[in-house]
Image (cartoon, rainbow, N blue to C red; front, side):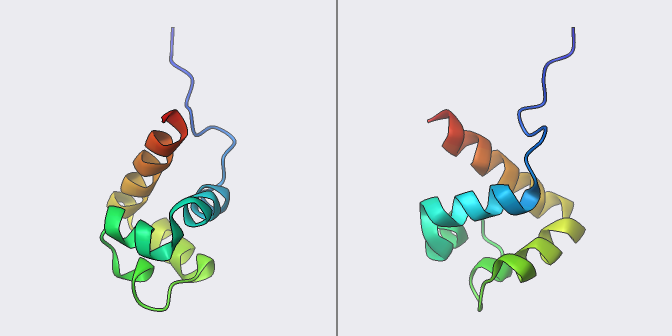
Length: 70
C-alpha cells in the first residue's frame, strides 16, 4: 500500500506563509540557506525561486514537515 503524501493539498504558498509566520524571514534564512530569504524577502519572489529550484523547494518542504511533526 502506498503511503499518503503529507504535502498533498498543501500549496507551496500556504507552506511558505506558515513557515514565515512561525520562524520569520531571518529564522527561515538560518534554516534554509538561500538568498531569496535573506535579501529583501517576499512571498512572491521566494515562490518564484522555489518553483524553479527543486533542491531549495525540497529543503523548504522538509522544514515544513519537521515543523508540523514537532
